[in-house]
Amino acid sequence: NAGVTQTPKFRILKIGQSMTLQCTQDMNHNYMYWYRQDPGMGLKLIYYSVGAGITDKGEVPNGYNVSRSTTEDFPLRLELAAPSQTSVYFCASSYSTAGGPGEQYFGPGTRLTVT
Amino acid sequence: GEDVEQSLFLSVREGDSSVINCTYTDSSSTYLYWYKQEPGAGLQLLTYIFSNMDMKQDQRLTVLLNKKDKHLSLRIADTQTGDSAIYFCAETGDTGRRALTFGSGTRLQVQP
Image (cartoon, rainbow over all chains, first blue to last red; front, top):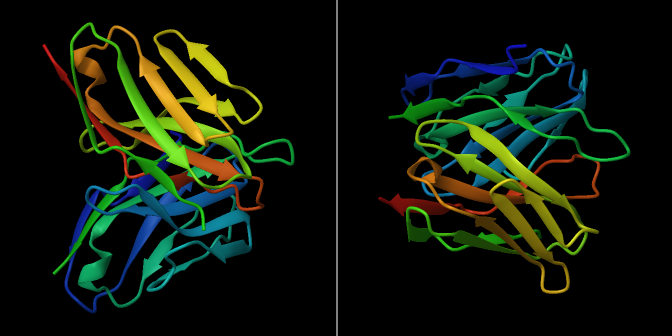
């Protein structure tokens, strides 16, 4: 198992550019998440998905979009990059049931700089 | 809304015990977690505790939960230089999204 993989590892964008951060998991997890981590801070939830075809907003969704067409993939789209989106982005997945949330497995992160 | 708070920094000498503290506000928290983040890396789950427990021990790690005061602590016995990292407290409530609410992290520095 590769676990949770993210691409790219690093990216520099100009203001107004667009990009997609890729996330794939091979553990057949139903739940997937996108978090951002600003310097010196904890992680904030951007979007999450409880299964293929179902997505919902987290705490800081503005400026982002997601889709979940398969169980494995959960890409995060930035349409018009802004300096405030400079951050490290982490994708995570878990197998959650009515019995409990399940352990969240994190990808290695994508470091994004918008200038 | 939910809030999780931690002190920013802790420095200990190698071989001593480290105690990292966390407070949370969500009384419906069901699971509480400790994650470790090394420089430039992702998050590694160290341990977690269910809200109906008050203590959990796992080798050098001891988690104490005071549910009345909404206080969680992580004790690392015989701290090593390899334990130097940022430690995040996180919680999840009994909501459908199962997402984690994180503290800002405590940077642990272990001096030889």
